[in-house]
Image (cartoon, rainbow, N blue to C red):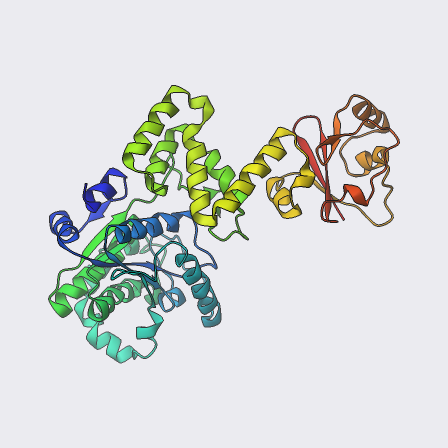
Length: 419
């Protein structure tokens, strides 16, 4: 199977400009291609990961990737399907975010080996010294206003209003394609399906200004079986930065993917072959309750993003937190990530550390009678260890890394004491 047909089989192609010509180009020789990433935050997220992994698939098939960080376009803001104008960031902020994004991209693409080694570039390099007059004369003249307002990304904002700044964004993105073609013979651009209008502005500029054909592949915006944008949880993205979304949290995210989405996500987010995935699907369908597809998905993606050690730590954290193990085997950071939603209580320096009293002051129980009952009946655990001593007093030995203690009441109710 050639790479184009594999991408289709994995559900990674939504639209193309000329499917036959593109398939031919990808089959006959090395194609240079790019994906642009605007630094609108200090980390990429799962939505970006789809494009990154598609870049990697093409590189593994022998094609040459250019990762474009939008140091210039990030200062403007993409209006595509946004209800209102983006907040403009300072140049220093965009520069700092660009560096972080660059570091994340370097984890997934091979920048060191072979004729098709990846290259990193920044569109600030060619916009920095381009004057407004030159931009209007050499680029703007190739776009009619009628053409620009016909784009869905602009149409959707015509009633609520769109500034000239954001209106001009599609020309800037189109100019990126032109510059990359002139500098590196880039002939293919990849992006999300919401970028079609901006991306075809690039093929239009190539045609008008250089008399060349450029290709576009849009990748579907990943949604779950309910149509909800994938990778979002109560408005919060699943970030690739371990400090924003811990490996444990990412592991749990994949482990809890709906059955209806699991196999589809294996095709999109892993490098398992389609044949391997078909075998996993058979086993998965035969015993859905064992969640094989989700477990494989969690293993593959967390290992890919954070490494094998982080994946193994996430598994260990899960087993201990939900299997009733000794929490002292974990570090404080892992525990806090695993018990993010658990009630917290800060223990004051002069607070009574007798377990009976602490259960009440921390809001774990409502009365001394209830506290005595729970301790006596074996319902209270400190760091995973059952405590049935009514006279028990917490000490430094109960503090994990001198930061916290976890009290569990019953099988599932965890409370975090911090110091």
